[in-house]
Image 1 (cartoon, helix red, strand yellow):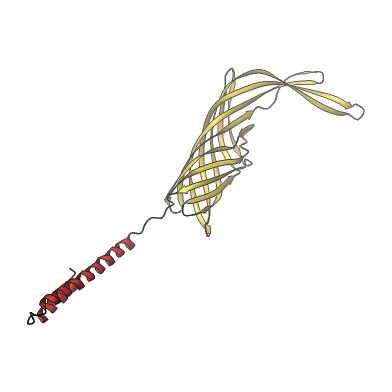
Image 2: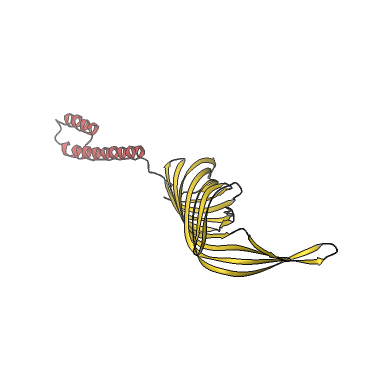
Length: 265
Protein backbone atom coordinates (compact mmCIF):
# COMPACT_ATOMS: atom_id res chain seq x y z
CA UNK A 1 0.00 0.00 0.00
CA UNK A 2 1.37 3.47 -0.91
CA UNK A 3 2.18 6.07 1.81
CA UNK A 4 -0.72 8.35 0.84
CA UNK A 5 -3.21 5.49 1.13
CA UNK A 6 -1.75 4.44 4.49
CA UNK A 7 -2.24 7.98 5.89
CA UNK A 8 -5.87 8.03 4.76
CA UNK A 9 -6.41 4.70 6.45
CA UNK A 10 -5.01 5.93 9.82
CA UNK A 11 -7.06 9.19 9.82
CA UNK A 12 -10.22 7.38 8.90
CA UNK A 13 -9.69 4.78 11.62
CA UNK A 14 -9.23 7.53 14.20
CA UNK A 15 -12.45 9.20 13.04
CA UNK A 16 -14.35 5.92 13.32
CA UNK A 17 -12.78 4.87 16.57
CA UNK A 18 -16.02 5.55 18.53
CA UNK A 19 -18.36 4.20 15.93
CA UNK A 20 -17.95 0.41 15.98
CA UNK A 21 -21.21 -0.04 14.13
CA UNK A 22 -19.79 1.20 10.82
CA UNK A 23 -16.18 0.16 11.32
CA UNK A 24 -16.29 -2.99 9.25
CA UNK A 25 -18.07 -1.39 6.28
CA UNK A 26 -15.74 1.63 6.14
CA UNK A 27 -12.66 -0.53 6.51
CA UNK A 28 -13.64 -2.53 3.44
CA UNK A 29 -14.23 0.69 1.47
CA UNK A 30 -10.81 2.08 2.41
CA UNK A 31 -9.08 -1.15 1.37
CA UNK A 32 -10.75 -0.99 -2.08
CA UNK A 33 -9.79 2.68 -2.61
CA UNK A 34 -6.24 2.02 -1.48
CA UNK A 35 -5.90 -0.90 -3.92
CA UNK A 36 -7.08 1.25 -6.82
CA UNK A 37 -4.64 4.04 -5.95
CA UNK A 38 -1.78 1.55 -5.63
CA UNK A 39 -2.59 0.18 -9.08
CA UNK A 40 -2.49 3.66 -10.65
CA UNK A 41 0.80 4.38 -8.89
CA UNK A 42 2.40 1.17 -10.20
CA UNK A 43 1.17 1.87 -13.76
CA UNK A 44 2.62 5.40 -13.69
CA UNK A 45 6.00 4.07 -12.53
CA UNK A 46 6.06 1.49 -15.34
CA UNK A 47 5.23 4.20 -17.91
CA UNK A 48 8.05 6.44 -16.67
CA UNK A 49 10.48 3.49 -16.85
CA UNK A 50 9.51 2.73 -20.49
CA UNK A 51 9.92 6.37 -21.48
CA UNK A 52 13.37 6.49 -19.89
CA UNK A 53 14.48 3.46 -21.99
CA UNK A 54 13.06 3.92 -25.53
CA UNK A 55 13.04 1.00 -27.95
CA UNK A 56 15.76 0.97 -30.64
CA UNK A 57 14.38 1.49 -34.13
CA UNK A 58 15.43 -0.94 -36.89
CA UNK A 59 18.26 0.06 -39.20
CA UNK A 60 21.49 -0.45 -37.25
CA UNK A 61 22.19 -3.54 -39.38
CA UNK A 62 21.49 -4.13 -43.07
CA UNK A 63 21.86 -7.16 -45.33
CA UNK A 64 20.76 -7.62 -48.92
CA UNK A 65 21.46 -8.20 -52.61
CA UNK A 66 23.76 -5.99 -54.68
CA UNK A 67 24.31 -6.07 -58.42
CA UNK A 68 26.87 -4.20 -60.48
CA UNK A 69 24.81 -3.83 -63.61
CA UNK A 70 27.00 -1.39 -65.54
CA UNK A 71 30.74 -1.84 -65.44
CA UNK A 72 33.51 -0.86 -67.81
CA UNK A 73 36.06 -2.32 -65.42
CA UNK A 74 38.72 -1.20 -67.83
CA UNK A 75 42.31 -1.70 -66.69
CA UNK A 76 44.43 -1.92 -69.81
CA UNK A 77 42.48 -4.51 -71.82
CA UNK A 78 40.69 -6.09 -68.85
CA UNK A 79 36.99 -6.07 -68.22
CA UNK A 80 35.05 -7.01 -65.09
CA UNK A 81 31.61 -7.99 -66.25
CA UNK A 82 28.47 -7.42 -64.18
CA UNK A 83 28.43 -9.28 -60.90
CA UNK A 84 25.86 -10.19 -58.26
CA UNK A 85 26.39 -10.73 -54.55
CA UNK A 86 25.50 -10.10 -50.92
CA UNK A 87 26.42 -7.11 -48.80
CA UNK A 88 26.19 -6.41 -45.07
CA UNK A 89 26.32 -3.02 -43.35
CA UNK A 90 26.79 -2.21 -39.67
CA UNK A 91 26.04 1.35 -38.58
CA UNK A 92 28.60 2.11 -35.87
CA UNK A 93 27.25 5.68 -35.64
CA UNK A 94 24.08 7.29 -37.08
CA UNK A 95 26.06 8.56 -40.08
CA UNK A 96 28.98 6.09 -40.35
CA UNK A 97 28.76 2.44 -41.41
CA UNK A 98 31.16 -0.39 -42.16
CA UNK A 99 30.29 -2.77 -44.97
CA UNK A 100 31.45 -6.08 -46.42
CA UNK A 101 30.70 -7.60 -49.83
CA UNK A 102 30.83 -11.04 -51.42
CA UNK A 103 30.01 -11.49 -55.12
CA UNK A 104 30.55 -13.59 -58.23
CA UNK A 105 31.20 -12.34 -61.76
CA UNK A 106 33.48 -12.63 -64.79
CA UNK A 107 36.91 -11.34 -65.66
CA UNK A 108 37.74 -11.00 -69.36
CA UNK A 109 41.09 -10.05 -70.83
CA UNK A 110 42.58 -9.68 -74.28
CA UNK A 111 46.13 -8.63 -75.02
CA UNK A 112 47.21 -5.99 -77.47
CA UNK A 113 48.09 -7.38 -80.94
CA UNK A 114 51.72 -8.52 -81.09
CA UNK A 115 53.25 -8.23 -84.57
CA UNK A 116 55.14 -11.32 -85.70
CA UNK A 117 55.52 -11.17 -89.52
CA UNK A 118 54.53 -9.55 -92.80
CA UNK A 119 54.22 -11.22 -96.20
CA UNK A 120 53.15 -9.03 -99.09
CA UNK A 121 49.89 -7.38 -98.16
CA UNK A 122 49.31 -9.70 -95.16
CA UNK A 123 50.21 -8.88 -91.55
CA UNK A 124 50.50 -11.60 -88.91
CA UNK A 125 50.01 -10.83 -85.23
CA UNK A 126 49.12 -12.78 -82.10
CA UNK A 127 46.51 -11.98 -79.42
CA UNK A 128 45.53 -13.74 -76.21
CA UNK A 129 41.92 -13.95 -75.00
CA UNK A 130 40.87 -15.06 -71.50
CA UNK A 131 37.53 -15.69 -69.83
CA UNK A 132 37.63 -16.27 -66.06
CA UNK A 133 34.74 -16.77 -63.60
CA UNK A 134 35.77 -14.78 -60.53
CA UNK A 135 34.84 -14.51 -56.85
CA UNK A 136 35.03 -11.11 -55.16
CA UNK A 137 35.25 -10.08 -51.51
CA UNK A 138 35.55 -6.57 -50.21
CA UNK A 139 34.96 -4.14 -47.41
CA UNK A 140 34.75 -0.44 -46.84
CA UNK A 141 33.39 2.52 -44.92
CA UNK A 142 30.33 4.62 -45.73
CA UNK A 143 29.37 8.13 -44.55
CA UNK A 144 25.81 9.36 -45.06
CA UNK A 145 23.83 12.59 -44.76
CA UNK A 146 20.06 13.03 -44.80
CA UNK A 147 18.91 14.92 -47.88
CA UNK A 148 15.11 15.09 -48.15
CA UNK A 149 12.35 13.11 -46.45
CA UNK A 150 13.29 9.45 -46.96
CA UNK A 151 16.21 10.21 -49.31
CA UNK A 152 19.78 9.95 -47.99
CA UNK A 153 23.02 10.74 -49.84
CA UNK A 154 26.32 9.07 -49.02
CA UNK A 155 29.95 8.54 -50.02
CA UNK A 156 31.90 5.29 -49.64
CA UNK A 157 35.40 3.95 -50.09
CA UNK A 158 35.77 0.23 -50.85
CA UNK A 159 38.68 -2.20 -51.05
CA UNK A 160 37.93 -5.27 -53.18
CA UNK A 161 39.86 -8.40 -54.08
CA UNK A 162 39.00 -11.08 -56.59
CA UNK A 163 40.34 -14.46 -57.67
CA UNK A 164 39.32 -16.96 -60.32
CA UNK A 165 40.54 -19.50 -62.87
CA UNK A 166 39.42 -20.30 -66.40
CA UNK A 167 40.77 -20.82 -69.91
CA UNK A 168 42.68 -18.78 -72.43
CA UNK A 169 43.24 -19.01 -76.17
CA UNK A 170 46.23 -17.71 -78.10
CA UNK A 171 45.08 -16.67 -81.55
CA UNK A 172 46.98 -16.01 -84.80
CA UNK A 173 45.33 -13.14 -86.67
CA UNK A 174 45.99 -12.62 -90.40
CA UNK A 175 45.26 -9.08 -91.49
CA UNK A 176 44.93 -8.88 -95.25
CA UNK A 177 44.62 -5.50 -96.97
CA UNK A 178 42.99 -5.59 -100.38
CA UNK A 179 42.62 -2.78 -102.92
CA UNK A 180 39.03 -2.00 -103.89
CA UNK A 181 39.66 0.81 -106.33
CA UNK A 182 43.40 1.09 -106.95
CA UNK A 183 42.98 4.35 -108.82
CA UNK A 184 41.48 6.08 -105.78
CA UNK A 185 43.61 4.18 -103.30
CA UNK A 186 40.65 2.63 -101.47
CA UNK A 187 41.40 -0.55 -99.53
CA UNK A 188 39.55 -2.99 -97.29
CA UNK A 189 40.93 -5.17 -94.52
CA UNK A 190 40.06 -8.83 -94.14
CA UNK A 191 40.85 -10.82 -90.97
CA UNK A 192 41.44 -14.53 -90.59
CA UNK A 193 41.75 -15.97 -87.09
CA UNK A 194 43.09 -19.37 -86.08
CA UNK A 195 43.86 -20.89 -82.68
CA UNK A 196 47.50 -21.55 -81.87
CA UNK A 197 47.06 -23.02 -78.40
CA UNK A 198 44.73 -23.12 -75.41
CA UNK A 199 45.35 -23.58 -71.72
CA UNK A 200 44.44 -22.73 -68.16
CA UNK A 201 44.64 -19.25 -66.72
CA UNK A 202 44.17 -17.74 -63.25
CA UNK A 203 43.81 -14.11 -62.21
CA UNK A 204 44.01 -12.06 -59.04
CA UNK A 205 42.81 -8.46 -58.80
CA UNK A 206 42.93 -5.88 -56.02
CA UNK A 207 41.41 -2.41 -56.35
CA UNK A 208 40.27 0.58 -54.31
CA UNK A 209 37.19 2.47 -55.48
CA UNK A 210 35.36 5.56 -54.18
CA UNK A 211 31.57 5.65 -54.63
CA UNK A 212 28.85 8.25 -54.31
CA UNK A 213 25.27 7.10 -53.90
CA UNK A 214 21.69 7.76 -52.92
CA UNK A 215 19.14 5.58 -51.14
CA UNK A 216 15.53 5.60 -49.99
CA UNK A 217 15.03 4.26 -46.46
CA UNK A 218 11.79 2.69 -45.32
CA UNK A 219 11.28 1.16 -41.90
CA UNK A 220 12.54 -2.27 -42.97
CA UNK A 221 13.77 -1.81 -46.56
CA UNK A 222 16.57 0.30 -48.04
CA UNK A 223 16.73 0.81 -51.83
CA UNK A 224 19.84 2.42 -53.26
CA UNK A 225 22.27 2.95 -56.08
CA UNK A 226 25.90 4.05 -56.21
CA UNK A 227 28.34 4.91 -58.98
CA UNK A 228 32.02 5.64 -59.58
CA UNK A 229 34.35 6.64 -62.39
CA UNK A 230 37.62 6.24 -60.46
CA UNK A 231 39.56 3.10 -59.62
CA UNK A 232 43.11 2.32 -58.68
CA UNK A 233 44.52 -1.16 -58.29
CA UNK A 234 46.54 -4.03 -59.67
CA UNK A 235 45.97 -7.33 -61.40
CA UNK A 236 48.05 -10.44 -61.95
CA UNK A 237 47.31 -13.06 -64.62
CA UNK A 238 49.12 -16.43 -64.88
CA UNK A 239 48.98 -18.70 -67.94
CA UNK A 240 49.89 -22.37 -68.26
CA UNK A 241 52.55 -22.70 -70.95
CA UNK A 242 52.87 -18.95 -71.51
CA UNK A 243 54.38 -15.95 -69.70
CA UNK A 244 52.14 -14.28 -67.13
CA UNK A 245 51.75 -10.59 -66.51
CA UNK A 246 51.14 -8.15 -63.69
CA UNK A 247 50.01 -4.53 -63.98
CA UNK A 248 49.06 -1.62 -61.77
CA UNK A 249 46.81 1.13 -62.96
CA UNK A 250 44.84 4.25 -62.09
CA UNK A 251 41.70 4.97 -64.10
CA UNK A 252 39.39 7.99 -64.16
CA UNK A 253 37.10 6.72 -66.95
CA UNK A 254 36.06 3.46 -65.32
CA UNK A 255 32.30 4.00 -64.99
CA UNK A 256 30.47 1.46 -62.89
CA UNK A 257 27.06 1.50 -61.24
CA UNK A 258 25.45 -0.72 -58.62
CA UNK A 259 21.92 -1.13 -57.37
CA UNK A 260 20.93 -2.88 -54.15
CA UNK A 261 18.05 -3.71 -51.82
CA UNK A 262 18.77 -4.24 -48.12
CA UNK A 263 16.74 -5.54 -45.19
CA UNK A 264 17.13 -3.32 -42.12
CA UNK A 265 17.11 -4.87 -38.66
